[in-house]
Length: 238
Image 1 (cartoon, rainbow, N blue to C red):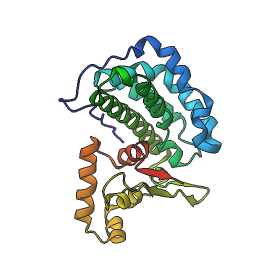
Image 2: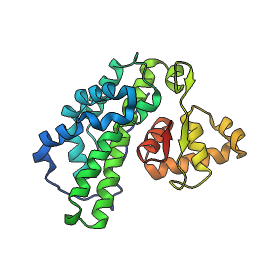
Image 3: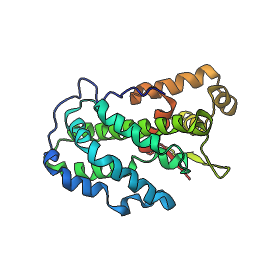
Image 4: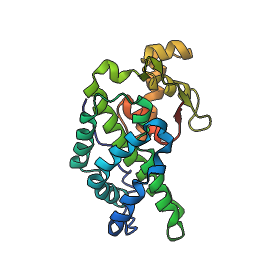
């Protein structure tokens, strides 16, 4: 599956927001690899930590550059992500863990921005966190799409483990209804026709609502839509 890069910012928002993080890469790398940050992955916390240990040293400098400059993530970083995912194609971890894999990184970025908020305008804080969310969403979606492809389209589409479906729940108040319900159904592999039948909307209306959200989030695949929804807290898995 081809993964197209997300736009880091709109032209109007693109500006250099230097936080001096490139000089603190070793410290940030250590922050990203604190085992306690992965407790949310439950029994898969060690697995997710190992993926971070593989990826972070290579990708972190580019992610910091992208967050501060608003430029795109380099293709070499995306290839690092893909290579990691390909080696894990036989992993039995649930899709929910894979899709939420970027959450620890996003929390660290959030803490970094929060620590510097007295030096930043409210607009700059918003821009930085928007960039961090897009970077985390892009890298997470790239990993998830490659992993799903490597496992095979059918097994990649099904969010199952040991025959039990993962239950995706929409978080009220995050986006307008009926998009919440549609997103939860997308996350469990429903087609537009199936979503229409479950929500009493026409397939065309479902397509319009989902396409509108994709444009808003600057993404163009359903896997990316679910990944970004999880990162932003619009969806949660239980």
